[in-house]
Every structure is written in C-alpha cells, then in structure tokens.
Length: 232
Image (cartoon, rainbow, N blue to C red; front, side, top):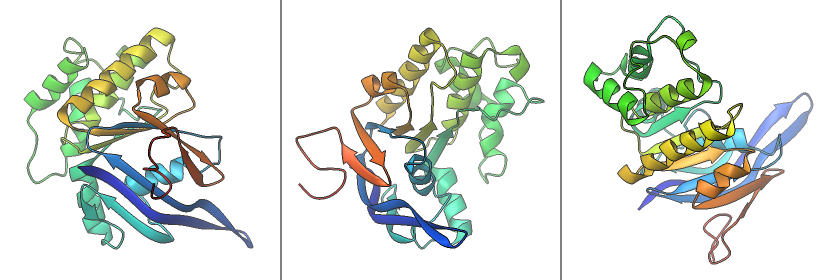
C-alpha cells in the first residue's frame, strides 16, 4: 500500500527578479512501512520536499498524495487537519517547550484535538523509547539523545501514518545516533512510513533505500525498479 506519492511535482520560488526551481518534475512513491533516506547537498531541495510531504507547502505544479488522499488542492484548514491525522515530525532541534515536562511535551500535539489523548498514551510512548523514568523531567534535565527520544515520542502521539525526520542524528554522538535510529526503525513495525532527510551515512544503513536530490532532481539507490523519478 502506498503512503506517499509526489507526482510530477515542481516547486518554484521568486527570489528578487529570478525564479528559482527547488524541485524539478519529481516523482516519489513511498510504501507503507518503508524507511527512505533522502540525501543531497545543501540547497538541493530536501527541505522543500519534506515540507510538501508534510503539507506545510504547496507545489507549483504536480500532485501530492498522502495517506491515500490527494492533498494538493485542499483548503488550509483541511490541510492542517490532515497533517495532524497523518503526519508526525521529528525536528533536528527538538523544539521542546522548556517549561513543560517530557510527558507534557509529548502531549502537546493533542492540545487542539477534539478527541484528547490521555496521559497514559504519552507515558507509554516515552516508555517505548526508554524514557519511562524521565516522564516528569524538564528539557534542561535531559541529554541531547533523551530530548531527541522525547521528540520521537511526541511525533507518534497522534498515531501518524508517515513520520518525517530532519537530520535525526544531527549533533549526536555515535552511540546515541545508533539508539535513535534503532527507535525510529521500530516505528515501522506498526506500518508507519519513515522519510529521513540526512547528511549522515549511518542513516542510509537503516533505510530500505536512499534517494538523492541534486539541483531539484531525484535519483534512486535501487537499480531493480524506478520507484522514484518515473516509470520502470
């Protein structure tokens, strides 16, 4: 089953009197439960691609399908609702609120949900990432790796279908990076698809495949099929 599709997607921006092409007619398909790493130099379009999949931006042309639904022409309110239902985010800089405990940070995405998630769900997720004894700790009482694990737990609070991660091992030591990638890999056991933008070769070792963005164009590491970039 397909979790994400970008179909003939182009994204252009105005920069002064120039028109910059961030993504150039790309085609991407990510299956349910698949882990895909996205590599490429700075400015190659990786963040733009993540923002489109996360329904934070719209393409200039082409279609964006997430969770089996074409989101290209959705209203902003419906996109926000869909994002909360389907997408989980793990940011490089964690973005934990300093005045909230680990449990409260994990529960934050549910603050405006009609069906609130109880504290048991947050504590369960923190336990899954090895922080069952840190639920009442504040961010300044946690290490970098522990903060990243809180961010992973927070990204899963709404039971997303797609997990988007931006440099998940950035600024972490080797041991912590391995543990974080192990936790992210476990997420796939529930059918969640993972898309990780990274400069870290270690992430590629955990991924099912790697796609490379260069100047807004994609290539795929798999040689047996052209799932990314066009038809076989």
